Image (cartoon, rainbow, N blue to C red):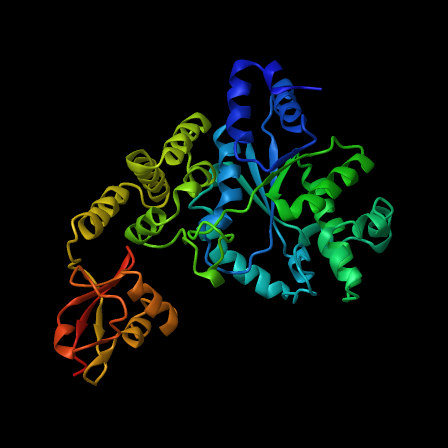
Length: 412
């Protein structure tokens, strides 16, 4: 058994960084053992991440596991990205309450192209291998596959929360879904993974890989899972459907503004999971955020600056300056996009906010108005003032919250 305290000083620092923010490390000494093995064998660890690309825009929530993978790369280890050219056609059932619609092989590969452009904004291409599991799964003989099935029982599969719920509710579970953890585990055997990382919803699948590796005489991979990132609302997990997300491809100013809107209680999690700050620095920011007031604002700014710098470099400074100009000094943005005000006088402001893309619905727009979050040329609209004379809008800047604004023009 290897405990972190028994590691050499340089490996102890690596362990501190790599373990920081992890939801779970299995077995508990697995990461330390793998680091020692790499040192002993004078080689880089092979750190696996399975990807079934959906083609969707990556958010900071998606990037949490990628940032952890980058940390392994920064310590000299190799990221092995396993594209689900075969498993993507099966569909990962993790967290699902119904059978997932499978993708075709062409869809998986097509989605992967755009997906990897985003991945490599985070990862170091020089320390990354990209493999397609169709290379071994699509050609596997039935007898070999049946040999693997003997390592996994139906009872084990039904212990999974998502399968257990669906079974109890008498909802269908297809045999192909039962095969998914097995196929993901075979990937670990094929690439000889030392460590597999993933979200907490992948724990069961990752542990299957350990069993299959043992059955083939390999050292069992360690498993490191990362938690789900809370959204900008500080309540629900980050998701595009909830609108509480920050996309890694968004403009710097948009990212900075969204990050400054998160609750103080979420600052430490964002700093730990979304930046490259050392864990001890994150501890300090967490303490400042918990203190509230000026200290919390300072911690939030540091976190926001670090995140934006990762994706936009030096543009982070300009994003912070723009934020201060808009919301600390109440200046009006000169580069706000133009939006035409529809005909009619007075103008129904909730409808205008929706048409300008500044609110998701009329009810959400009314809530923003009542909360004092809607401004015309930097001046807050009074609560319950939903109808505004046309003359008070033309040529003005309409803004909501702390990030978004449009310059209003006539409809002609």
